[in-house]
Image (cartoon, rainbow, N blue to C red; front, top):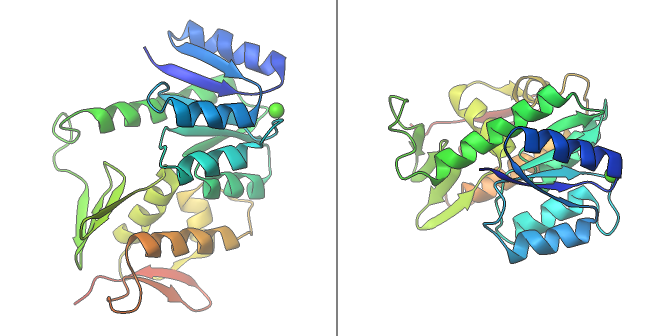
Length: 239
Ligand code: CA
């Protein structure tokens, strides 16, 4: 049975979510305060299989909660509830470490589908042989000493492994699949994150800074994630 933490202070929404998630056979706990949610997620790291996290919360807002638990190495899947049509809210949530988002007011079917997607991925990661069941080959790419495991959502350089959020993983996968081609920031917003109305490209730059750090891309190593001036980014496979 999947255990879900719902962090939402508007009681009618929280109750509606509890009712519907329990109807799907999930076990639900509700908290209405962001600071309490962060404390619980760090104290009991394996208690929940996923978190539904609202942005507007007393105590600490959803961005701060996501950022705090990620900074502490807690990688429980987080589905963030954001205001509709506010791409900057979405990007802020993804930057903070959310794995996915659903705009409010949400359609229940969409929320459930997104949540099930995160739960499937979580189960898959916990199993011993994630890639052998029904996929042909593990989705792994090794470039210049960096090992990128898209299934496990991890980058390993030497003996250091970094966990990726789903959005970081999706961005990197997109760049790797289009290796050698300059990819515009607009294409990243639209094709990778589904943000057709956004012109806020600063968030992408922040994601890339993070990915470069994970990839140990910098002085002394060949740059594999390059900036293309005036365009965007390019993943370069060293010769
Ligand atoms: Ca709220």
